[in-house]
Amino acid sequence: MSVITVGMADFKTAASPDLLLTAGLGSCIGICIHDPFLKVGGMAHIMLPTANGSMGGNPAKYADTALELLLKAIIGMGANKTRLKAKMAGGAQMFSFPGKPPVLKIGDRNAEAVEQELKRYGIPLLAADVGGSFGRTIHFDVGTGELRIRTINHGEKVV
Image (cartoon, rainbow, N blue to C red; front, side, top):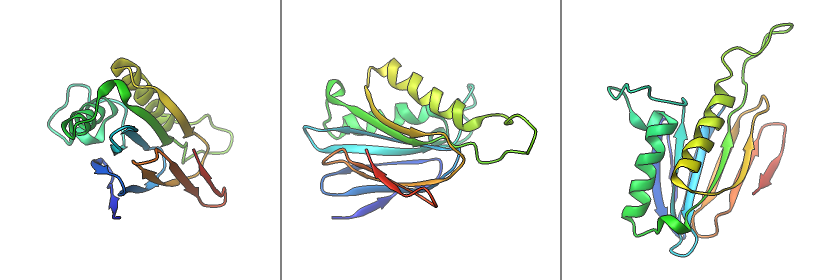
């Protein structure tokens, strides 16, 4: 078994028994998709909701373009789109100022964008651990679909 690290604005695929890991999810979203029958899947570390037609940058950075890349890669491994399931974590509001409303709400916008893209592709979102004001590190087991979420001062959970 290997642990495959997914960097910021990056995506990777894996087959069981390998695990996918991403650290430092603040306002970013870690989206995990797998085919429970074939035991393959992938993870993307998404930074922003939409590319807005700007393809000059890294497409793995945006919810709309990263999901498309991730799905193509997973289907390329033999996964069946009708069996795909998703889980996600992140989307925190990392910065706030006393007496001021949250600015930009990137975390919320990222989570909404990922949910919209999953609906567009017809992929059910089985679990989400989003929001709050704390960062997360996630481990995804593509074989079992288990998403382990660790936080500083907020413990660990498995969804």
